[in-house]
Amino acid sequence: MRTADDSVDPMTAPSPAPSRLPALSASRAKEYQRCPLQYRLHVVDRIVEPATRATAMGTLIHSVLEDLFDFPAVERTDERAQEILGSRWEQMSQDPGVASLFEDDSDRASWLASTREVLAGYFRVEDPTRLEPAAREERIEAVTPEGVRLRGFVDRIDAAPTGALRVVDYKTGKAPSPRFQDEALFQMRFYALLLQLTRALPARTQLLYLKAGQVLTMDPRADDIDRFRQRIVDLWGSIEADARRGEFPPRRNPLCNWCGVRALCPLFEGTPPPLDERRIEWLLSTRVA
Image (cartoon, rainbow, N blue to C red; front, side):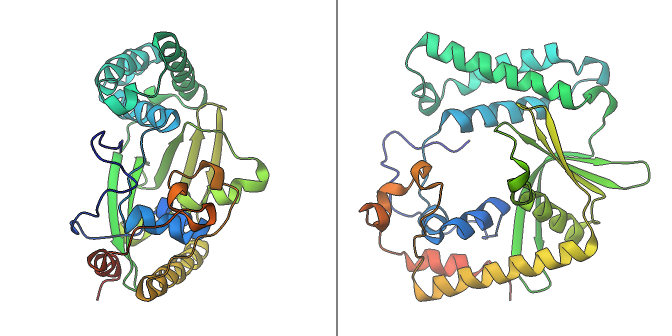
């Protein structure tokens, strides 16, 4: 989980030198659609937001569900998962950024109890004793025919005896209403595209909403994912154009009140840091020659 260094103000920290090769992820693609400036501050300026209770819960539960499949099938129970959570929480709570999220022991205990309830919800939507994942927390990188480098971290990939693949992603937040389900499936289409480019188009993708005990399923079609690929390539073209102009405009949207970099947004009387040309060059190398 990303947390801010207590000795550095994340809103004024200088941009580090470019390191690993850049790539477009599902979350950053959605972020750019929502607000180009927010995308720039996170990707180009490398502003790191402090931990929140929601991100801490997500990180903790994801680590538990990854570890759960290290045990023999018969031991993959709610009791075992809760034991893993206790061990993982002991490690995670040593992080000052996480510890600072709670007012006192009672507040922390209440949050931990709600986290345990969300974890228990996993066993209402799936039986892990009947599964043998082909991959867990797998980093997948691919390049589209148009040269755009993509990257994603997939929670789990299952493989049927026939070779058919299923992509599974765990969600610890609220399940979307029917009106917003297609937006929620953006991530699943992105993962389907990654697998189409590297292995084979998955037969099924699923979002498991643990708190609500709901499963959102999509069976990708090749023509749909081809259209989605073009959508992603066009989106990257917009990012490139902004980068070459040196302008990533802010865009007011329903999530502005929850934006972690709002203090740097001109729409809220903030001032973004000067653009680092090295970071712009680094970003533009997302498109492979």
